[in-house]
Image 1 (cartoon, rainbow over the protein chains, first blue to last red):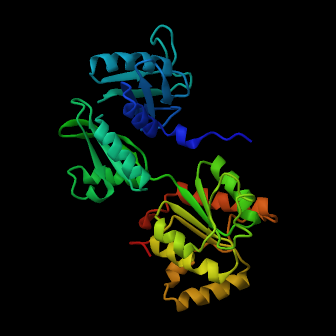
Image 2 (cartoon, chains in turn cyan, orange):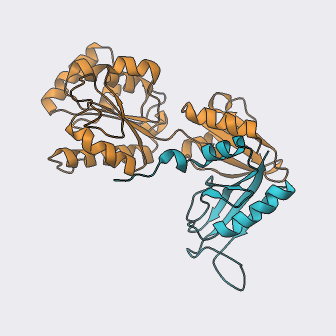
Image 3 (spheres, rainbow over the protein chains, first blue to last red):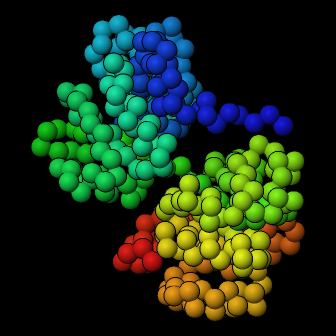
Length: 110
Length: 238
């Protein structure tokens, strides 16, 4: 029976390893949630300059948008706060189908 | 985040110590607050609360919004006894998200063949605990029935304030155990923390079912935050 390698699932360990390899990386963190949110506050996603990522800040609903914002953060070096709400083409580019709202803080790891 | 902070945080996590990353949202300035530094921190009250609940979140301060990201050690189950129940418990515990370790000095039981891909210590609990002591984020399940093996880690678990302590054995076996622990100087309140018979009362009858019952009890104690003495109805750890 194949089991997931729990070591590889630890986002902060992955972040430290990637930084140690000289990769430019950003760390995204869920800092606030309202209503039904897929991942609790404190959840991390680590992203490198090539768009590789590990971890999660939602159930896969907004990771794509967070990754592209993270590339800007890696370039500019300035942290950003992102907010995602219910998936709605008129109000949000991407969103959470579960109906919750989340705030995600994206910062560069220097 | 500074790499130095990230490395220091991962260091604390590897040592199974609680740590909190404090981020001022407006400025992005950050600091790491280690378990031992909490009481001296200006945000000690909010940090304590975050640690107790295990829930990260934003707090309003005079400096504006501050995000407290709490990193608690992952819950770990230590089973004393590489017995049939442990063979069922080990994969179930992993699936439920717990780290699991098994200690049994009887090498015929504690073999890699019987426990593939499990952290297994084929030595006395006394020796393992010197290197890897219990902490409040550890659940201890003693399931050998043998006082020579069970009693030492049982006493250590109660003294440490482990979030769950269970012991396998009939009521008669447990009555004798209570006598020995009383003689060893443990208080009735401390001894009462032992779940015996071990596991949720679901009428479990075979090793797999008993493993489910044990895991249910461990999950309940973990989710009810029994790693904190006041959540166990105590003013301080036993």
